[in-house]
Image 1 (tube, rainbow, N blue to C red):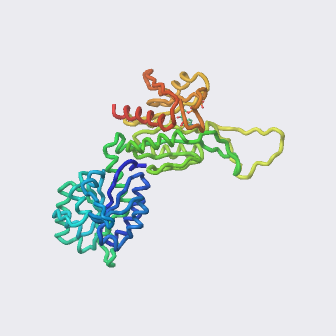
Image 2: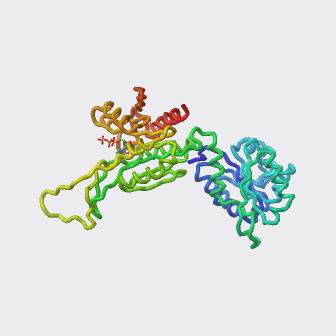
Length: 399
Ligand code: CTP
């Protein structure tokens, strides 16, 4: 979740686009934000405060003094928020913002907010084009406030033109990128492979392995939290895929190879956690293979090593991280893989360590870097292991 722990005041003003503040509120909550909605009186003609309070999980505030005589301290609200988002922003409230008018709670919070302010104007085309509106927008822009949209399209009046409030998804994206801008992997694009692959024998049977995809998903989640743009190329997994990344589902080793070859050239790094099948049935029978002799030989052919392929494609600005799951001669085998696949570091997973490997929620790994530098991590949750791996990658990328 991109907005975990972020406190956002969602200001809603009187515009027909106020109905879109409900899905916007839901999207912000879905990303983990703590949302406090403040409406103006006229906003409530377009969207019900009850809807917004159910979606935000908090009573909606509108007046300086509520009906039950509670004082809504605008100074506290202004200090509480990490971001103040007014969507939709009507021409009327825009004008109040530009002149510093303070006639309602929302305007008072605007004057007292110490946090960044984002506005998504919404009004009819001609109102938007009026020099007064342009001037008001310029005034708040000069103050460093962020203006989202408006978009071009059909307006409530039936006219077509500029003035529509940007779609909630676009507004959400702007808010997320604002918060990610200072994160260590902001602007970086990273591929993660995860899970098992399935190699078909016939339409009903396949060869696979025990990989759950948990480690790869934990790494992808940690990368997203660090602000990276993540593509998760995953074989068939039961685990829930987190929000905030691009999920590219694949089935076979060959599908995974093709997806990696396609996406690696534009990536800054790839972390290869997938348990890719090393062999696949040499032929695929399009009809179910029938039972006959007592013994059945199944000829297998080697699949392409995806990590090694990316190792060959890798440019000097790209980073490649691999995993090695070993049962014996762990260090020797892992170091061989580090070199033969041209990796920047490899994460050694020994199946001899209790709590490490497939299906568990914990893992115990050693990070092996080029030049004999190792980091031995104790047994810890897969999400902590993931954070350590991502931290090592960040250090390499920033070195
Ligand atoms: N890997 C890959 N493509 C393959 C096989 C492995 O990308 N066809 C990657 C894995 O995702 C992992 C690393 O290579 O990051 C090592 O995988 P592993 O299965 O431990 O090693 P293999 O090279 O397959 O060797 P072996 O199975 O003989 O140990």
